[in-house]
Image (cartoon, rainbow, N blue to C red):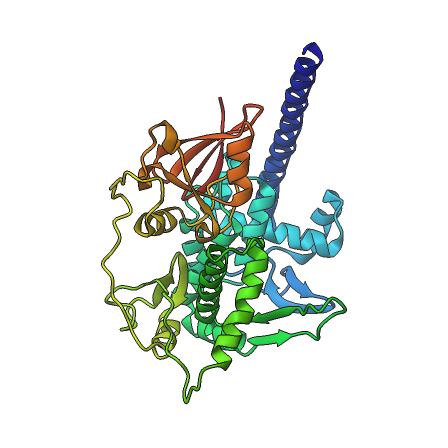
Length: 411
């Protein structure tokens, strides 16, 4: 027992030391970023001639290193700064561009870095992902990041997609049409075990239909007595769906019957607000029109009140509760996990056997891995408010997870 306590104490001490080292490196980078911004203010140029620009391989693009709205800095002065920092010419140029992009185009991101809430490497990725956006679109993304301290990459991608839809709809539609041309569905030849790899890129609505049909058939196989794993039953379900289709004498394509939840307003299809949402993903109004043209039935449902609390007495979770929880939380609520809530288990925060209600206020989406961690290890969480959770690790480190992302909590 003494050895066990010593080992546990040593582990906590090492983790604390590592965290202190990480915080020290971040503090040093913050000081470096502040000085780079000051350097930029002292080395501005008025015209593109003599300004530092981006290179694409051996070709100079002529585009400023930090994107629309950021200042032009001297090419020759930049060479000196990169050398002083000990970076390679191309890598240093890109690095300075990302720092200046944060300083001038992403004020909320910059403030989060300066306050120590956002790691500089995360801010660099945000600057890199938004560099091609207009100043107006970049500002929209920056506002959407709020405090930016817990941003996830999926959230960032969605904000960028929405910014392009709002501020550059022609680009958005061109990219959508170009991407649609790359749809494909391929089946490899069987291998020596009689198995074939299947892969492809589908329209998102088609993929949703396929996923729901496979899930229903796999569940039915389990109910009929199959002891195979869920993954195996899903693969078998695809074959059964194919054979069922081959038995039908169809003169035309069947109408789509699976459910797709699209959130629109009365201004979406009119063009006044070009952004709709499929679950929590921004999509264009043109995509909605295309999907509506392929369905045989459209069902309009009332808005779901995500704050509604209507408990039931059973342990089994009604579909309406699951949908409400999925729309509220979007993803697994474990720190930094981005697995879709629709692919997660729904956990009773307070176990049903100990009086926990089967109610959205007590239900949390957790992917299978993190559900097991909560059930079989010392990981714990508490519901601060529905949709906001405080997690505690086995060694006492804590995080808050909410719609803004994951944030460390200090005890």
